[in-house]
Length: 382
Image 1: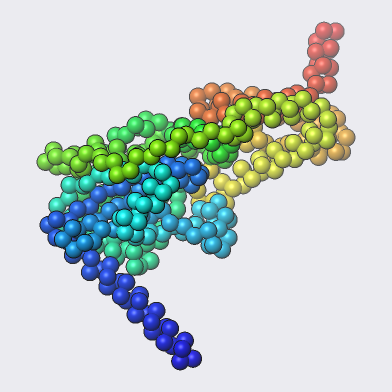
Image 2 (image 1 turned 60 degrees about the vertical axis):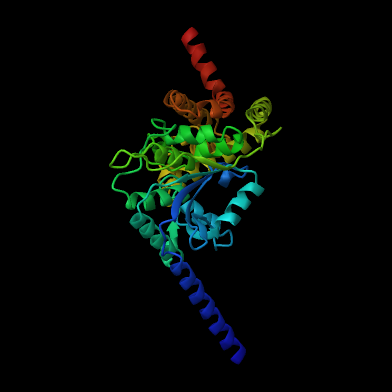
């Protein structure tokens, strides 16, 4: 018991020391500066959009740290359930600037810096805010794909201490959220396909906030203060990536076409066809229900269920029941919905991505509906 008490006292001492250390570092000198750190994309899905940090440095005291709001814990109970639901907690962390840069150098990712032209008072306020958050519950936030992430959290802190708002001018201005995501995932086809299918109608709205690191970099670059001076100095390259874009022999559009063509060829087999109906029907239910369950608004109102349709499970039921007439009628209804889907998709950036899947589903449904179509044609001829 005595050993446990000593360990508790030691832990309390360390926590207090850490808190005092962070708080003591927030008294900034005239030589201090705050800068935005923008990191380039990585190879993993969670890193493909880049990363944002905010640097607080003071050469007079030797303080040089980077705060970032992109931390999450894979060991969180029910991690994937919480992520899908939209109540997964992310949190802020602080690292030394040297360690932060070394990490991105190790993974061969770009590191860019913009020194922000704040007054000493603004720098002090931001440094105090960051130092307070990191040792309190304020460091936690509920992650949202477009609305609340490592970039938007930093943008909110900067905006809160500026007399003007960060400019919305950036290379993605005028694009939809869906188009921005599709363009960023061009080297990861199956990830792109999955995200394109699970994202709903709200993703087709035009960009109205800076949610990507490069967007915030460009927004700050284009921001003028009240006196007309720029918010930031020129972008400095701390580390330039030498990595070549990765290519995959399987994760691409061509393997997807090949897979769909093979499935079309063997879909004459009733077992194959029924298996695909089951898979697509269950996916359709998931896409329909997850939007009601999740707090992620971007996956609600998912019109992709017109293609990957829960009605396929009804078709599957009638197929097993050997009710040919009902099977054919449901197939025709589903074909009509696929046609509506194609018309709706004509101006959508993911049309090209899903076209092989559209063709596969249309071929399967057409094979179910052929007897009815032939019979109707024969009656008109007669």
